[in-house]
Length: 192
Image 1 (cartoon, rainbow, N blue to C red):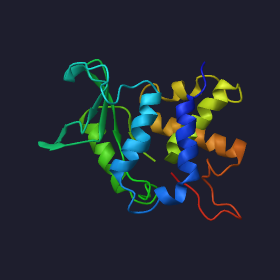
Image 2: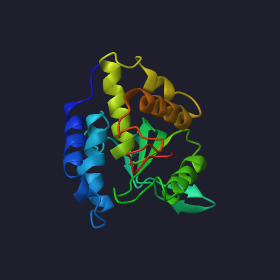
Image 3: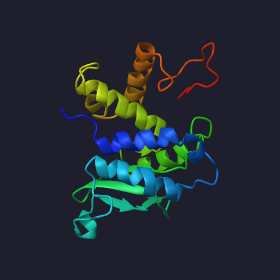
Image 4: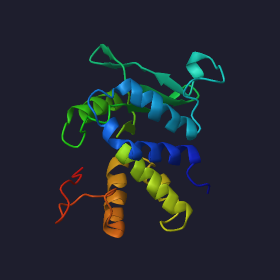
């Protein structure tokens, strides 16, 4: 299996290098979408900007996709499709939004996914993406079992399976990337 594209590794490094700036309240959602989220999904092979020029109903990514909730139209930031079939939503939040303590973004995305009958949707947070990239690189280097991420993403209950992988990685690597338990010497941890 190929390793993570260099473009993704570069995005992660740029974000880590300028973390304090990106966490400022004035760094907005549009900026994070243009500078990080769009290039991230492009590096994974999604035609985010419709560079191929396909008809709207066959575009890989629909920006401000529409989902109806109780008759009202709502707009997840991205709708990802394979052919005409919607597969998942991505909802972007600026890095200063603490999705570990603010439940509103997760609730918003769950409503979108539930209403569209989608088993998976993604709430951006460079930590979650960093975790996935780290585990994927470990798979490529045979440090972690091959295709464990792919298997975790198959069928219903994706999020609990991903969290189990993250918790096991926390036990194994004892790093700040996977930090789920309060420990002496660590001020912050991610209880989700």
